Length: 113
Image 1: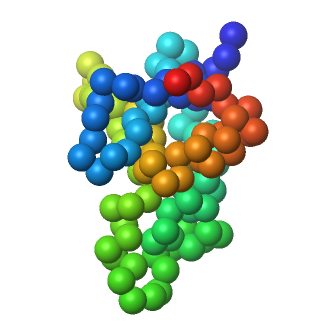
Image 2 (image 1 turned 180 degrees about the vertical axis):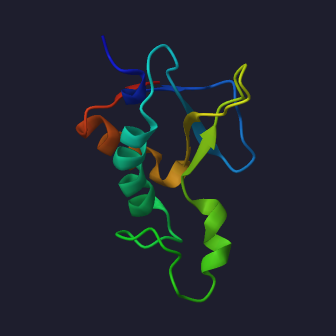
């Protein structure tokens, strides 16, 4: 059985004005948020136009703040019965979606579209 932390499902019902595709983490099993962070942050840095590819720090160049909304973003789930929100998934801009998903699949993630 696949770990929930390695499976993302495209949520076609969520349309976004910024044209980002929403992929929700499969919540059917245990989620190790440390693993998610180690696996997904490097991709977020790689595909986010406002962040340095290696460090994830905001680039020091003119207009970089305008690029913040253009990159991939993580989101949290709704709070559970203990009022704790967990990693819910990722939103991917159209411009980098295919490459980001390809990299996820290459590293062992299951992506359902």
